[in-house]
Image (tube, rainbow, N blue to C red; front, side, top):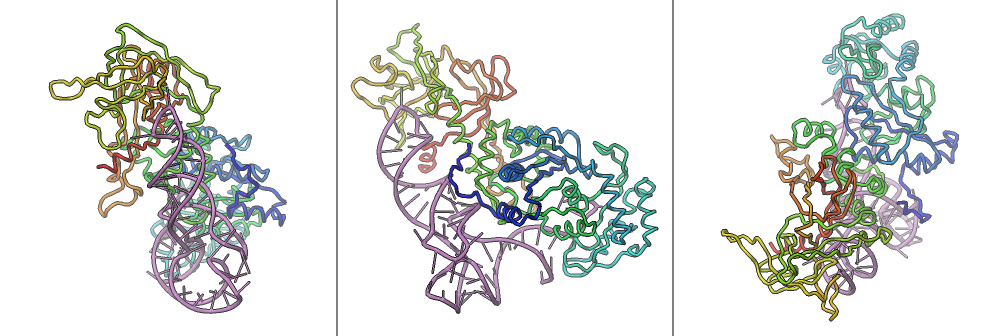
Length: 563
RNA sequence: UGGGGGAUCGUCUAAUGGUAGGACAUCAGACUCUGGAUCUGAGUGUCUAGGUUCAAAUCCUAGUCCCCCAGCCA
């Protein structure tokens, strides 16, 4: 997939910084990054951007990238997510080798560091309630007030902190705070909380061992420091936290990585908030975290997205500090590009309409040769049965054709792919006037699809033999949201009003018999409609296929223009 | 209105004082046994106003707009 054969540097400001750091010898020329997910939900395409960035940078500069679970808040985290996240990263194609870490592995060490800070007079135990802390903090424009507990002696702080650790105080009754500056214009520096007491829940890894847990600000820099990370890449909202990140490491006088912030990924027609994503899962709006409409990696995997396409997408969108919303069509472009090259073609009729060939012998069956993938001759050919009664797609026939519709219509001749030219002689309707059958004649001289007299067909239709085809279920997924920005909703409502009520449509379809033996995960292009993947819900006798992405469709565009 | 960031085609992203380029999308054409793919071409952009300079997206000045921060979340 690498197409960076050019010498042009895949440059972005982060790689530029790293290059400078290597040249200046800041970290001894080392590059060591990390991807630090919190195990409180599933990974989505936004995380993929961070994963690719961190792992790709490490590789590019001959460095390493750690996988580290930032499990500092047992009230929100569960082990279930740890395994799901590991699976997703592997699926994306990245390998952390033996460098799987957990913030909880460092709890003891962090505690020691906290004691050091207390001994330096840089941290104190505070008895203020959450509400009081908030009041004391001040506002954006007014300075905060110092806590009355701010000047406890070091001995008292040490004793109290030890007791916090022993679980002697009720949850929420005390915190350990850094002693910095209550008047700082950066609210993060107004004596931030380092430890809080959590006793009600057990940690998924340390169990009931701890009654105090470190906050992000206190923990994250330490984790990076302990792992000797060189470049700690994070999203823009942590920019305000960098002074604190630096302050802790400076006070402790320990190894000090460089934090660099970049803009997180946003995409049109979807949401990236774990909370809202969880909400639509919980409400049953989608069928779980791996629903193919979800922007989660699990969802995209089930939707049939090739991981290579996602990686290429992440590479191409670049890294910058500008807030941006990427057009989802760019992702779909890379999915199509990949699938066009890699997936075998099959003929499947999504909306079956009977086509009867009047002059074709009743009992006859022919085996016609079809190319598996015109983009890859090595995939060879296969045989497809042809007979008197076929199915074509409803959309390929119009009794009174509109302008620019050049598919089948009464009196018209078109080609059936790999088969014959057929000419429409009329239709059969039911009592309600609905067309239930299209009649035609075929030209035996055009077998295989070419007319010896040089006659051309403007289009080629796909078809299946009614006598031989099998039933499959197609799940046609569309966008989950109607709005480019689902978070754009009127006052008093919420993002769910932007949900697309027709984001899924399930159809019983007619497929060529070769599709009988498929396995979940197998991908195909159903000719003239789209790319499909076999879903794990498939049952014996009824394979289920998810639409990955449709083919580009000129006629669809024209149709829209005409209406 | 305190502090921290950011503004380049419709959308992303390059250009680091020297021809504003690429991708997606759009439009037009060629080709085609997928109205697919492929190929060719086209249009569209430096937030504004001044200034420095032979030369400014880039440097300076003054504005404008957008994002983030008042969790014992991360």
